[in-house]
Image 1 (cartoon, rainbow, N blue to C red):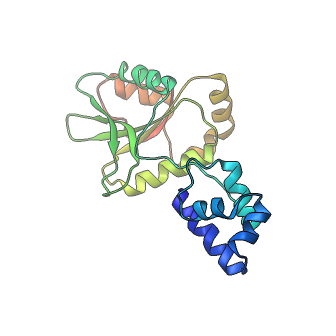
Image 2: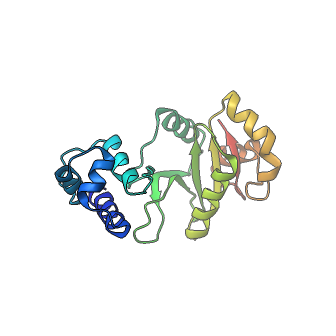
Image 3: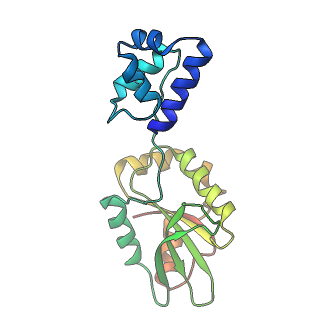
Length: 202
């Protein structure tokens, strides 16, 4: 990241016609310090320092966090998946963190349920729904990119917030998740994969 920012600062400074000394004066740093930032040699530069250097040559530094390959589950989601597993009848079996089949794709289903006849269901667990549409789009893209997904179960923690959100948006999600929780549970307890995807509050 330091190397990328350093290159962008150096390129923008040169394109603006500013010398290193002039840009450093605008940023309130020494020319040698700005040079170290441009070469990614500054030890542990602060965000405030990088912002000042960027602003001095007409850039706005914007930071955004992206998920890496490590899938971190919160305790609420793990507890939710355990409650789900407790409702599975014989001969259903499960596997956690099932990656999508595309090489290099770091997305994964939280769990996959397998039936005896080769049928399967992919489970996406949500402990707290922030954005219903974003959740639905994310699942739709994963389903599109994973031909082996089978039916998809959106597993949601039964909290007052989540119940309120789903009560407001349930019908808008009906085409993507046609079954309600009771129908899903009947199938799972009987040891069968549900005939279609749906939303299950637990």
